[in-house]
Image 1 (cartoon, rainbow, N blue to C red):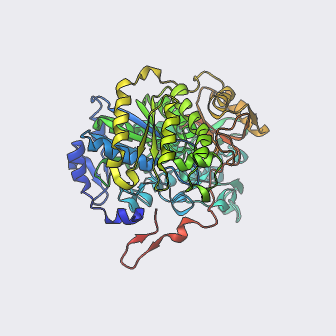
Image 2: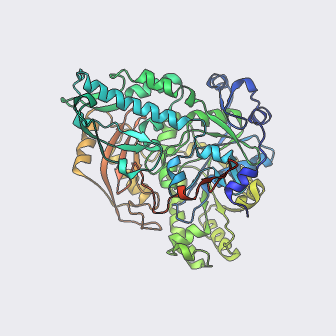
Image 3: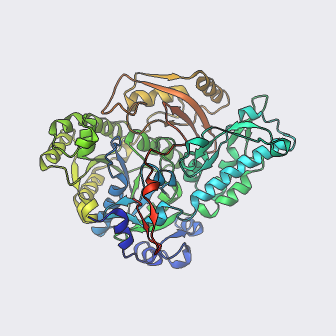
Length: 559
């Protein structure tokens, strides 16, 4: 079979103006083209659709990811193509890939095989410049802050309290902790600083949760960058930074329209990681898609304990959006991995390991159905090495939990390989009870109890412990009036615990919070747990070493 990039490079794409008009009824005058195959949709036009009813929202999530890969984005695309293939007006809503993992360990995030969004190379690299705009606005605030201190510090900012970090859309561990302002008085006041990756920044979260330019500017103004010597919060509004930052993000806020290999329209907009941020594409894109299409398939990052939880407790809480159904992606390989099989042996038939690994899938299903109250089916993304015996065992075990499983071959067969899955989702939607939807915790719980509720209800943890500095920070936020905000847990994606090596469904472990960060503009509090990093490093063999440019301009090695 051809590689992902060979398939994408050989694809015959329709002009994006044709996709917009034929599939969504959008005239070219409402598009801002970025070449022939991608465009932004004018925000003014999208606001004119506010009287339209919303379509059905389908949330794609997964079990805890493994090194073998599960194909959540691929399944999102495959399901969208299958629904469209049944004659239904359908859109996909995906996150924009970060160049950190593209050049690092994970590779691209545009799907795979015959279930991709295209142009794949553009989407995985600079795309329409949204991330560059977010980085520029973020770093402008950092520069204005240091400049304010340099020119008299009228607000009395305690430079030791500055929380606002600079950002970069690449993995670079050397930038996690730096010192700025060296070189004498003309270069500013020396202080400790650091970099986060763009997708972990509060500004990315604001970008994805905002609903309008006015809301964007208000949220940016609410950003707390540090404190005065009297412990008073200092905001971006007080630095007069919010207007210029909003200007940098004005055009980026319009959602990006692309297509799948089968010409299903897709919004690809915003891209927070789910292990260190809230992991959902933009509210603007999701709501617009629901007014343009009858069925919208969107993904949340990583497993249902991370992306789906944050979709529910942050995105839905803030926006009022509600998923009508969920699809939980599993693979035989992932179940065997959670059942104790190491990666080199995942191709061998082992029904016993499948049974042992079911505890991971079972807990995710329980959380989705009983904690979030979302009706759910399982998409079993088939790999060539999966045996019929193993697939049948998965179907049998999941059926025993009262959930339907739909094996799918969209990676090889495109939308046609996910037709049974699409029909299963449509059946599920007919019987769905939207009143069953619920948050994991109520707004009124103190921040500490919100963390404990997540740990006990979703992760199977027995306790939550806090570094001394983190606990003091939490108490300070409660005293400052931020206690009603939801929490965003930053932890490893590979386990329900904070230990990436604990497979399956561990219980009795400790959720240790080492750092607490306020994201006042985004409207949540980040709890950094375990050894998760908000500026990742590169692996020993980065994907960048396999990516190349041929003499004729063709990009190769991107996946």
